[in-house]
Amino acid sequence: MFVRVLSTAVAAMAIVASGAFAAWGQPASSDTPQAAGTQVQASDAIPVNTEERSLADLDGGGDAFILSTSRQRTEIRFSLPPHVDTSEAWLRLAARPASDGTAGLIHVSVNGGEAITIRPQARPIEARFALFSADFRPGQNTLEIAYSTDTPASGWIVDARRSQLRLTLEPVAPVATLEALEAALAADFAAPRRIALITDISRERVTLEALVAQGLALRAGQVPLFPSLADEADLIVRIADNDRLAAEDRAALRSGDRSAGPEIAYRHDGVPHLVITGRNLDEATAAARLMAARSFVGYDRSFIAADAMTATRLGTRQIRDARSVHTEADLRTFADSGLPFSADQGSRTAVQFSTRLDADRHGALSVLARAALISGEAWLYAWYGDADETAPANHNLLVIGPASTQIAAIDRNAPPELRAALRAAERSRGQRGLMRLAAAAYADAGDAAVGTEVGIGVASLFRDQGNDGRWIATLTAPDQASFEAAGRSLARSNLWTALEGRAAVWSARGVTALDYAIVAPTLSEQVQEFAVDHTRDAAFVLFGAAILLLMRGFFGRRKRVRIED
Image 1 (cartoon, helix red, strand yellow):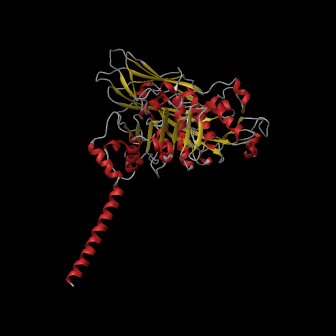
Image 2 (cartoon, rainbow, N blue to C red):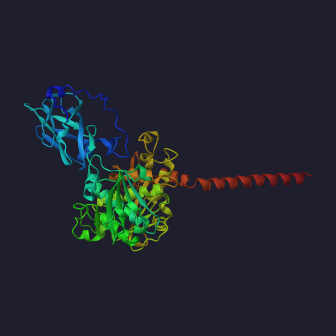
Image 3 (cartoon, rainbow, N blue to C red):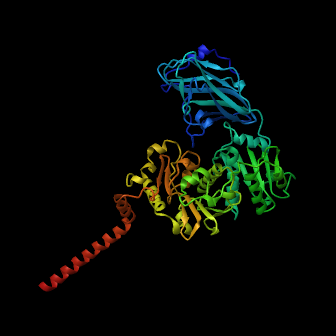
């Protein structure tokens, strides 16, 4: 526990914002703005986790908030896993005065405990100070930042993006039950964010992984990272029928050997393992559907089909009807609600993965997990398949993965905006400035500074030209591009909320929407597009013309030589 600090001593720590606090250091880079600076320190048993999160990410209310006489306090709620103690807690508070006459005090407390008081001067501050670690507790916590003044001062504007809460959490015991695992997944700090899905190649692989990915996202409240290697994971999920399980996985089942039907089991031997299984592949699929549909609250180490009768529903059921989506629906509709594909838990939707590589499939799972989050519930009754399968023609179709135009339904119905967006994304990988419409989607060295590969992708939503009642959408990437990077960057950032139009190009630089029904391309852009699209044809024509001219010159010279002879 930290020694309680006098307010006068803390006030001395408020300094002019100038990039100070080198002792804290720069936060480690992250895939998303939702977590920054996660650091794991090795120990003999359970690792200590030090992590910092911005107040904007914890609160979700914006990048800034105001403290004034009319709004004297702001409460920021966050959760901690059930199996940890807080050994250190620090807050970096960045704020600026609302006016030159700002005065008063700022008070910071946790869960109603004793407040730390800052007496800043009327100039921008960036104060770093310790919080009372004993005030933190497993489960829900509340950080309160309050303002008081004896004068009618205008208060402070707190930069919630630069203000960060840093916690060092020491596990006191392993996560022991399904209920504790669910609470840990939902935590804002020290949550298992890297989750490896271990499945075998089978006809139901896409279905199994799609349902489990959605169930994990709904529990976590965000899209997990799906690493390719189990050694890189915080949680390992094994999905298979009984015969393919390892002995230690079978031992975790309720019977101690084999399941009597669909079953979800949990074990922890240093790394938490979730086992999703059944006596055959169909029962394993039913277990995956249970994972996406029901909460584990109240359950110990196993969950069977009979438990679903009394278990709490996972997610939030929303009333929706795909038939209410009018003819002007676009990517904004999908990004906001998942419609028309999320209607009735996906019962009228076919989800097809156009992925060939494991990494690209993980990108597709990230996209689908984000779709479930914005829908409020998993798409339990959707048809799932890969590019080699034929999706039902009477379902709406969502194709996720690279080179999706190779799917016949996409290629046959693709609007000009989709083709233009794909061309723009393809050109942006090696060139710049060919087309104004794709300017915001260009990637350069600045994108690489994030620390991961920059993903460039394309989204589009349109109607089937042969069936006006059928919607088709794709989230894809150009040929030879990494859809793992593209899907992850879209699913784990606010790029998702910026999708709009009939088609859009996204990258780390932003989203560019294309909708010719609203803004038609100019004549100059059409000429540029035509020239770029037909460059190869023009080269062949010019090459052929050159050959003809050479042949004409050659035979012309021979004819003149014969005449002269």
